[in-house]
Length: 172
Image (cartoon, rainbow, N blue to C red; front, side, top):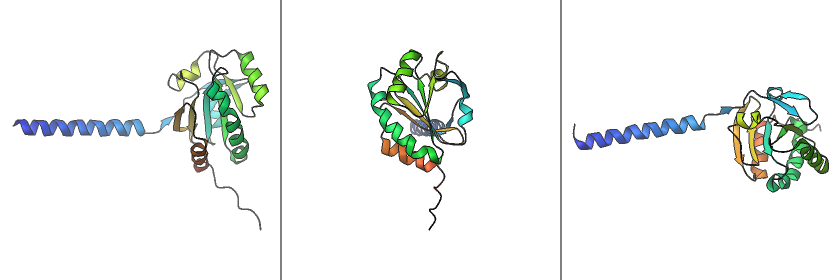
């Protein structure tokens, strides 16, 4: 074999490996099997939300971006909850439960709030460390979007709408 054939062969091997890595990284990851503790102390398996699109967002009371996003999430939730959309906001393990409860009351958050007492939720979602970090789950439990930092609410809304059933037609 000459040098040109070896170089060309090596190039194609690298190209194939790159394509396989791309396909592997873009395949839909699944939501983890996870038991959460809601703010009121009741247990809730994440699987209980299967069948509807769910935004799982990791946040902290000390995260200014998280707090500034809350009114937009409340608006999105109130608009799309009747069609089956759910939000699960998971407070980071370092957040004192009393601080979480106070902020939830002050902001009148209508969606589900969970506490990650032992860090199992952050680990299950890939060792979340940055807030906000959000995952949009399809009704079948696939992770269809992962976002760190401030989300584009118009893009998020459009993606959620694509996961919801069409609204019933208005009667004439």
